[in-house]
Image 1 (cartoon, helix red, strand yellow):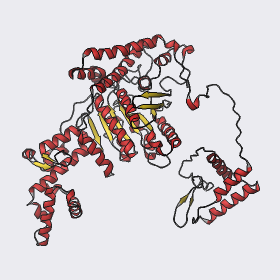
Image 2 (tube, helix red, strand yellow; image 1 turned 180 degrees about the vertical axis):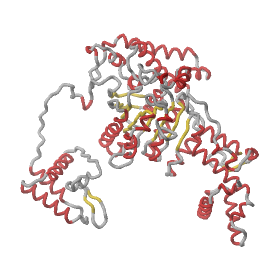
Image 3 (cartoon, rainbow, N blue to C red; image 1 turned 45 degrees about the horizontal axis):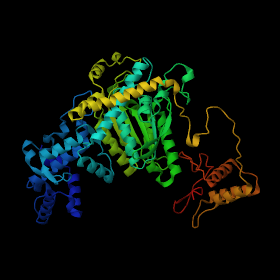
Image 4 (cartoon, rainbow, N blue to C red; image 1 turned 60 degrees about the vertical axis):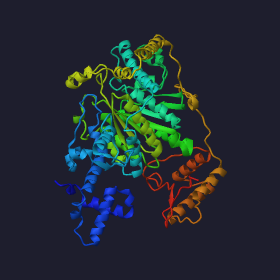
Length: 613
């Protein structure tokens, strides 16, 4: 098939119109082509299709442009992100012949705007695209329709080829967090044999990723981070990210009720926790929301907690408070709560300035493999509904994970939108430590059994880069020593009860008597404000009469109906400096047309909410 058949008439027409308006935005070849085309039209020469035959380099450039676009669009299909599968090297939609290009074209020079020189031979262009989009990070971002967001991502990724460049110190920090994650799980397995802990083994990379996240977030002036996650890896996150005392974690494994931690009373891998971290970049308050076994039930809780804190901080709230959700792959694809949460994310009443979604993809849901669990290519495909970037990361490449979370947070802070980071790894144990995964996935677990731990893999990489074995071993020994010392003190766990604004809260019931009344003069003043309209506002006549009747009832002290009393209650709270939030499709008018919290100008459609002044 000849090349011109690969060019749609609509695309060619769009390029022509673009050339007429902004010729500098096209490559020199296409500028020459359309100049010739216009001359040909003026001279009554053959139409554009015939003209194409006299511009072979313009057609070749068009083919290269299409190839570049397609690598950005589907290059993630060749990304090497699965530790259990061989890496793909070819895809028919990315083959040269698909674009009427061949080996001879590899040495031809073409226009390439995102390369430093602005041009390169085709061989170099393809190399640039492959190292950016087909290595340890696969990126889906071309579905984003906002050109500013898309170009921002493109520039950031292609400038560095999506290749992280970390210092020696940063690499040792990554290794230390991997060692902490690995040794913690090994210690629990040996110390509390047979007890459920929903191990993180196989997904330990999440610990250096989260560690990088909290430091990056703090450097971006985020001061409050609210995290929600299910049970897998929760104890590891509490120990190695939240710095929950190891003594307390170990005490929770004891059967003796005398030594149980004073907290929510739920099982240890459902409990919440909060702490204040003092990092090099500044202070950060971390909250882990409690979560039952119903996996994604915590999603909206986290969003609500984050939104409340953002509202309390005012205009800068979204930039200062970050919600983070860690999902399992099967749950992200299979539970409606995820789609509902995504759907609300950009609405004024629910938005939280962008949530960082981390999908810990261990490629199995309880005992079900992906081909039996979903109809989509990726577990994250539901997130495309938001037109936000999705990063797929090799689960045994901690540097790629750290780089991706940096980029994800920069995007979130820049555009105030969600971002998805999928870490593709595996689950070394069964669903829990008493489960036998070989019953249903024998071939998969043969592969897993042969995999070294992630900390060992990364340690080997650092050894090859010249870091001494003594330094690596010293880190591991100090971590092991800390675990053993904490186990010896597990009966002396620290009291980490409620603090801050919750310090007066106790587990024991205590009756509280509060005076909640409002004096008559205040109520009348509030009622007058609720019934008033701005100058020039044209309310619906029936609503205006309704509000007048409400005001009269308050002044007379009788006939105050439920909706009137509710409005006064809300107004009095707002007058005292408290916030009031109603949500739901009918919340402004009221399901039974009784509330009318917001008025609409009948001539302009302008909204007016007397509570908001």
